[in-house]
Amino acid sequence: MEGNEFKSRFLPFNGLIYRISYAITYDRQEAEDIVQEVYEKLWKIRETLATVQHEEAYIISMTRNMALDRYRRKLSRQTIPVSSQYDLCEEESEVNSIEQKEMLGNVEYLLATLPQAQQMAMRLRHFSDLPISQVAETMQLTQTNVRQLLSRARRTIKEKFENIYAK
Amino acid sequence: MQNKIEILIDQFYKGETNSKEEELLISYFTQAADSLRSDTDRDVIQTLSSAKISVPSELEQKMASMIDRWEMQETQEKMRAAYRNKIEFRKRIIGIAVSVLLVVGIGFWYQYQSAGNHSELKETFDTPQESQEAVVAALQLFSHNFSKGTGAMEQADEQVDKALKIIDQLLNEKVANTAVNHTLEKK
Image (tube, rainbow over all chains, first blue to last red; front, side, top):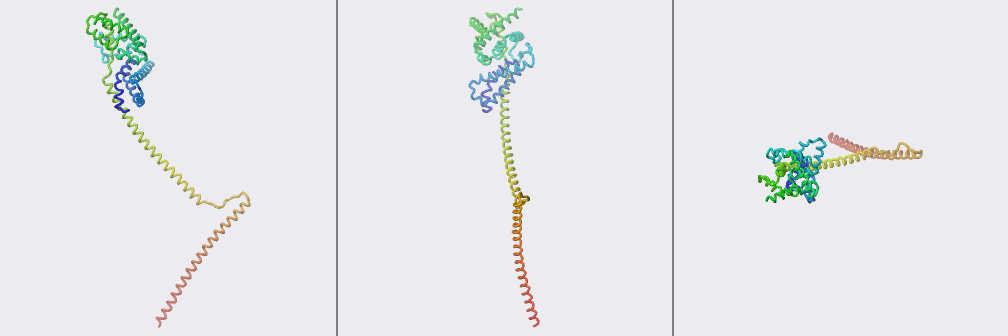
């Protein structure tokens, strides 16, 4: 497979790879490194990719595994404080007002208090803006399970949000 | 409309809304000054929607450049490998040629050495009889070679005799001619 064919076939997935990587690692630089790593691996095995039926599912799975590996390595190297786990600074999100930033800070904190699976579902759905089908693919769950996770997470956040603002 | 929004908010908390429906909710909360639901619903939905990350605009271009670079490296690597193979092949051919020359050279040398140092006689023997036979053989060989040498000498003698006879004959003829000339001059 030539470079041009490879690019036309796999480059359109760069946004998806980046979003999934970011949702797992919470780090822009790590996410970019993972995108590069995924493309490097795809390039090396490009001759065997002709037999892959569902490219998107294949790439999601590869990205998920690489991002989780990196995240685990990172965790083993250092203890990340909850407040710095989220790398959503001004230029990378669409936050405009100071009030929203403040609330977002709370949402991040609230997300960090959720069970891991709920956190992941929320990040993939809301931060990375993936449709339910791709969230399910990434988490290797059914769409019904993802909807349940999102439901629980949203309800919990709402309750905690109310508690914060009620004080 | 408001009834529909109520349903969508409920569906949102049940995790049953899709991207389009969530976009509708966001747009509703952005436009409507006072909603049916509490401010918390609005804040939760707006905040979650505003937390979307953006993909770096240059990422695709960056990856395209990397792919081009990998392709170029691979091409160069293939060319290098082909060149290395060519050199290896030449080395093998030269190695084989040198080996053949060496073997042939050794063969010639051995043959030359064998021919030069060939001895028909052994130096030691196990039994006196063998020794005696060897002595006899050696003497016969000597005798044979001596005969050959003598024969050659006899032939040489014969040739020398012939030559001397011819010289004598020529000298005699010359002396006779001189004598005749003197006689004629006196006369």
